[in-house]
Image (cartoon, rainbow, N blue to C red):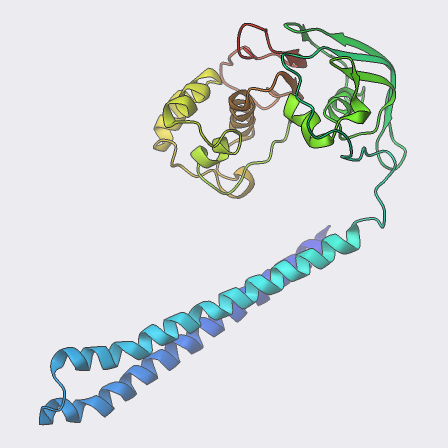
Length: 305
């Protein structure tokens, strides 16, 4: 770990030094070019060949041109970083998808008219590498019901969540609205059954945009309302409103706040069935009362979890 950390520090230092040197060289050349332009144009001002506004234009043109070139070093550095990252990802990925993962093939038009019922019988799932997930699980979830799944770490709660939304291949019977889940395309299944993870993904954008990923037509009033439901109303106002940024991967918010934002995003999306994987594990303040487990929407209302 220490060796990897030292290598990362050296790489970041080299990249930062290269960008600093490039910026310094560009600034130096821009200054030299501007001084040269001033020296060349000054006699014309004395003789009346050019006037003061044109002299300013002559001096500023080199600075503008070199400002454009100044972004080149940043672009090249970013391109190299992206290319290296892509190569590392390609080297890490297996040649074929592990058998334990479910493909996204299936009926992409699946959209049940109401809240579907879920049924599991004798379900078995494994994680890639052969790690056991679930063994012989039975579950019935009808519209309007909430099911709380409890157990120690490693009992299979997250495995069940991954199986319900179609990340893991299921052995046994798993039906959604009476239809075999394996016949439903992965994206269509996840439009019906949403997942709120324990460690959610936040993007380096403002709060508004992180919520609009769930429903891009939502108004600011709707966003503030759903934030209030998860206990973030006062926090958003203290941060300056929906324009406040959350940082890269949510670096500017706490773990509990990130989970609340993810829950607000899931509620805004209004999934017919919502799976919550320990969504309140990082909450330290007074909490609202979302369910922890698997819940389906009441037919007459939006999910209250």
